[in-house]
Amino acid sequence: MPVDVLAISAHPDDVEMTCAGTLVRLKSRGRRFGIVDLTRGELGTRGSDEIRRREAGEAAKILGADFRETLDFGDGRVAGTREQELILIDLIRREKPRLVITSYPEDRHPDHARAGRLVTDSAFYAGLRKVETNHPAHRPQQTIYFSTAYVHDPDFVVDITESMEIRRASIRAYASQFYREGSTEPETVLSQTSFLHAIEARARHFGFLIGVEFGEGFSSKRPPKIDDVVAAFEGFEPGF
Ligand SMILES: [Zn+2]
Image (cartoon, rainbow, N blue to C red; front, side):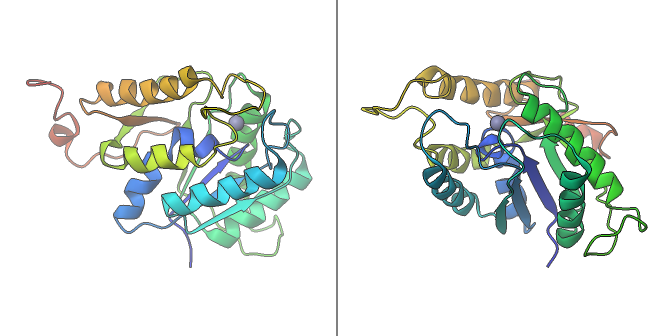
């Protein structure tokens, strides 16, 4: 059965910190979604391959993903080669998403930036019949982007107030990566309590922009269609 949304990112845990609240919200409205990690995140300082695989599986279960697939494009080596493109093209055709979510093609981490470009290009090529793979051509309606290290002005924000707690739980599933009391693993940027606070603060900031408690911001090359422009701006003033 096709998914409505495919969230594709460089590393297991990128999706949880950036667009998981939106995915959970879509799920609660009957949409199907899948998560694809382009790499196993094997360069991560803490934890191990096996631990990260287990954590990613647990996070997907918490979010209610219809599937999660982890590819092996190589942590620190996402390259956008034709070989990687063809793997992604075939995967997109197999799952037939209407919407693809990926990282903004400009970021501090080259894997995130390259993932953004690779996924954008693959989603387009997936619609060309004469590019042959194991599945027939299918082009998603749109690819949209979340910010990772660098924050980009969002073109729209999704209210994730009702799904924030599930998003937090999915992030906590990566116990080897984030702050945990008594851990003897080496300290990293991600493992400090300040990092989790920053992730939380970003959701609050995006939420503030649309007059709700928590939000997730997205960029899109085309503007989304809005049915009720009055309802779209509800909540800013007054009483906020
Ligand atoms: Zn990442």
